[in-house]
Length: 286
Length: 151
Image 1: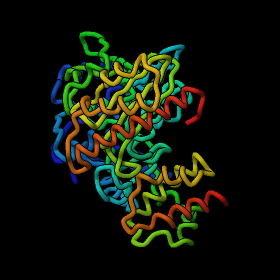
Image 2: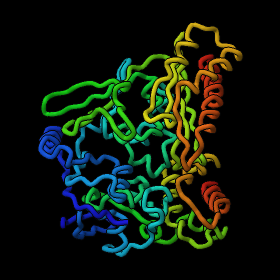
Image 3: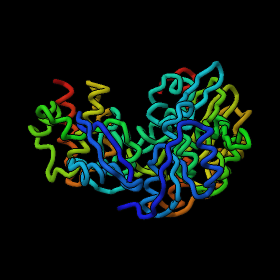
Image 4: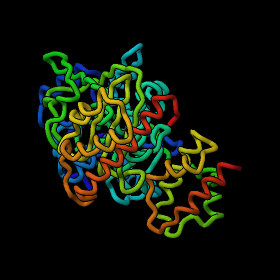
């Protein structure tokens, strides 16, 4: 399938040049990083920009900065680079697991984490991890830099709070000691969108949950957290908590599965994932 | 049209491209390199896989213009001086029927074995999970990779 809508291609060398282009072209421009979503959208006519701005020559966006209790993931960092980082594996295990479940090797070699949240499809694998980590997104425009909490980022299906003249610099995550898992339901392994996904964070006396693919935007599961936090976690409590899940999610029925199946599997993955996370917390290995 | 120059299968090659042209189309139609195939054209099937700067990518999801100054290797490049070990084990095991997925499988496998010469069965499956074969020849393909990695 050819790309039918003509566009001009720009490859700026630095942030300043990129911001000038964005401020000039606004909605007419699209940022190109990995391209694994954008090129499909261009082919299928979902996107028809007049300008495509390739940010892969901008060195600062490729940074993955690890400091004492903070990790900064630049907008150009690919899923493969995240998976190959020892620090990500050790300090952000939920993001590490989610990254490994994104599509397939050939896509992960190109696709970026920031691109994933900018596409903002409901099924995005990286969202539950970023939500339980309370990640913060750094964006910049000619007017200056601002930080946006991940909870405010998604505004609708494929929609974010990012303005047309803004560029994402990267994602900040504060690191704390925890264990956790990302459980994904797909029809087969490799290259399948999540039918349902749940990120589970187990810190010291702090349980956090977030979903993807079972609502228009990925979200934290606050009712579930309120119910469980402060309680002694037993099998009975977990079973009881699972019954809260249908009130937190709003799955749809589509070609990939029915809403009943998604709801059922969310409960199963919650129980399975929480038990696994608690075992990991007590020193087990995944 | 813009001129791009890439190192393609160890040779410097140039051509003129429109921004809308994908690397897959340019490789096949302008450079005459036919091993990458157009299957799904949306990054799902892996038939168009090529190695770009040492990593396997979906050439249907890369604009040709993005690759200016970069290095591309296809199966033609891998087999330039004879078949690789895994290509030979694939032949021995009659791994393919129609062969449409073969170039993608070879690219993915080459990347895997370059980075991890002795993968486990699980690692091979994971690496090849993004390459679809509609003749359902998966098992002999997996076995070919396993055997090549054990030699």
